[in-house]
Image 1 (cartoon, one colour):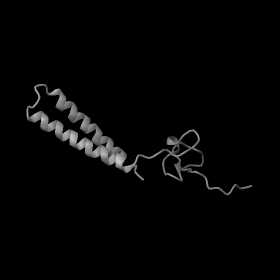
Image 2 (cartoon, rainbow, N blue to C red):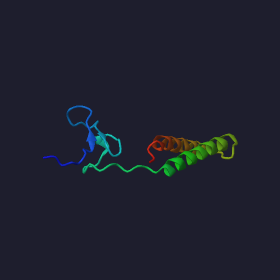
Image 3 (cartoon, one colour):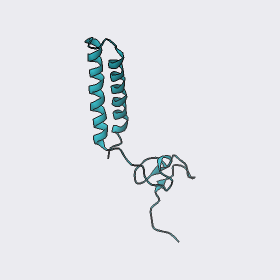
Image 4 (cartoon, rainbow, N blue to C red):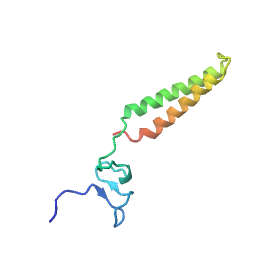
Length: 98
């Protein structure tokens, strides 16, 4: 007796594995929820916003560091590092937009 429904995961070996790919979202079985629901995706706008904000913060940190506006150089260094982290986060999540 066949249910007629297509399986959610395509097995890459004969046995079930965490590396099986989902037929709906294409991601591995291991990133799905306990009820096998597909993970939510980050909107493309959020990735773009992280890229732009990170770029601006990193450049602002460099400019403030080399213009000697602050006597303490920790503030521009923190701004630069925060910008780099946001930029990398935007790069990492940018490919996941629908």
